[in-house]
Image (cartoon, rainbow, N blue to C red):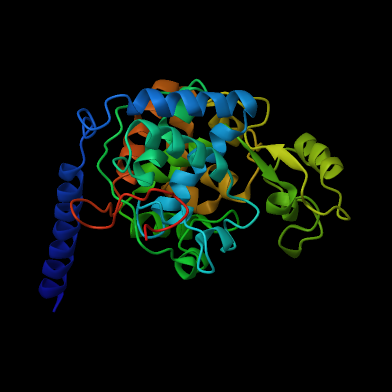
Length: 329
């Protein structure tokens, strides 16, 4: 029985690795070199305009790619409108943003190369450019994804996405479910080096954390005081605070330095360093990234490429949407 179980587990792992390898081999960095040679320049120009208009947009576009890939794979299902839209799911409602920017990018791309470039690939390129234009690393994006035909609001609501209140072991399990490991958990959490979060997402840490009647003891006391003023118990929860205190718009390793000082904004940030589960999983990675930005950048790039390869539609699967919000008629 034990031998059979081991063989079964090994076979399952090998099958997953083979599927990942096949998917990756169908994507390439030069996929549009002949069909839309100016694609990267077009996307970069529009992303740059959007960030110049609102610097927070870099984090928003990066988050769209993340939230898309964890549900249905990287197929731009998040962009679809309608009653089953993933935009209406709890993790995205009044939270996911930047859809109008994606529309603008898609229109610019369609003007140059009609019916050629998928919305899923636009999300992947825009995420890379958002990181690069914020001072982070560059990488060659693998392309060739096609767009999904259906949204999956049920899955988006079913705790598939890692959430700000999840314990560390749950977050690790959710990453593992899509083929990402513990290093990927920490590296991709480093995306919180840019962007903002609403009080509603972290205010539970400020006053009566886990029913203790006191703030979260792992949070720096001066930070608690500042955030209590920003997010009083009587507020509507819509005020925002930077995810990376004192380095809100620069893509760097400061986020990890904050975790060592108890200055992670979200509970899901701070537990990467302060939780009991972190001792044997993520803490040492956080410490390494806090001291070595090159290591963080390298691992972040590798994790972004892995994430971009979660169940992509390729070949004749899916379609190339003309409008990212609706399936072609």
